[in-house]
Amino acid sequence: ERRLAEQIRQTSAEMLKQRNLALQVVNQLANQLHSLTDAQAIAEETLRVLQVLQSAPLSLFHLAAPDSDEFNVVASIGYAPEQIEARRHLPIQHSISREAIAQGRILHSEDITDDPRIDPVIRDLFPKDGVRSLTVLPLLYHEQVLGTIGLHFYDCGNAFSESELETLRSLLRKYVVA
Image 1 (cartoon, rainbow, N blue to C red):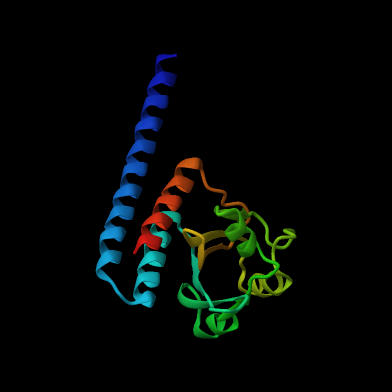
Image 2 (cartoon, rainbow, N blue to C red; image 1 turned 30 degrees about the horizontal axis):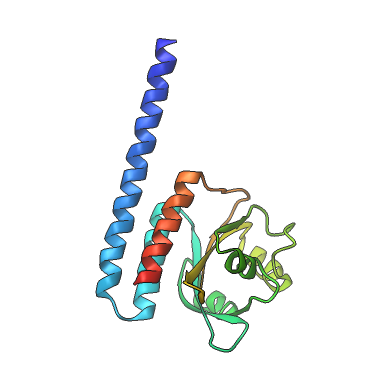
């Protein structure tokens, strides 16, 4: 019983340590973003931090195209130029991105091949690159849609803990203020 209590204490201490480290990284990002004025540089730095925090091998940062139902890629990690070009303008009308924006929350698809929220174009495109699951982070400032960040994973699953989701939400708040 004493060993179990010690293991629980150590696990809790490790979780708190990881959470504090994540929040430090988010705060450092916020400080860096406030000094940047270029949207692409802000997007690239945000993706870099997300890659460190969430271990997403691939990610895309899309900004909403004015007067359009498309998002345009402004930054990416892990994709080759031809892959980025194939994803440069993605439809959002019938997509998990649209749902994430409408609900104003982070959404996750554990297996994109079986998820009806995934646009057929995306369902066909991403598995060719080995992407099996994804997470969409909506970028909203008040009621204005700024875009989305997509974290893409090679394996199914990758659901985030509540602590990880809170870190992502904190990062999103810092980004939209910048």
